[in-house]
Length: 166
Image 1 (cartoon, rainbow, N blue to C red):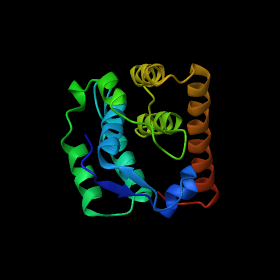
Image 2 (cartoon, one colour):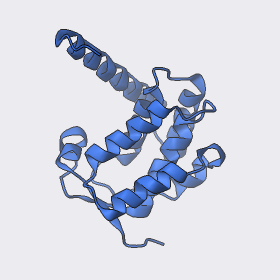
Image 3 (cartoon, helix red, strand yellow):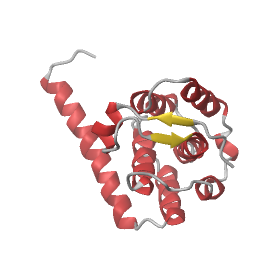
Image 4 (cartoon, rainbow, N blue to C red):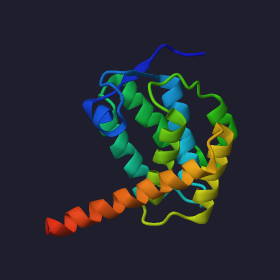
């Protein structure tokens, strides 16, 4: 049962994901998605700080700051990802979104899992399991993994060309 709370999406969401700015995402759906992503990224036995921070940073860009958004972030910080049931979390998500949310969720899972510099085999297996639960073909997963890899490569190239001192 929904609480009626929502989180509004930002202009960045429109730029990055093609979703109209100010679109509303149901709070509980967002929580289940976020918790599923934590479980996937933690499938290698640890949720690296870089992985968690990637997701928080992405959410801070995608969502408009609000009381509901801050509550969402706090729930994620307290979530017991080690004991999460991925199938249960994913089955609770009602896909009433203005994009292919299954693909978007898997894309975010891949990006988050790679954020610590390693895409562990157990994380890949968790992404594959999530894809199976969501009914997404394995070829789509390979394509999403390739997109994530290309984006990471393009980011490194851009930074190198700008001669950024890190």
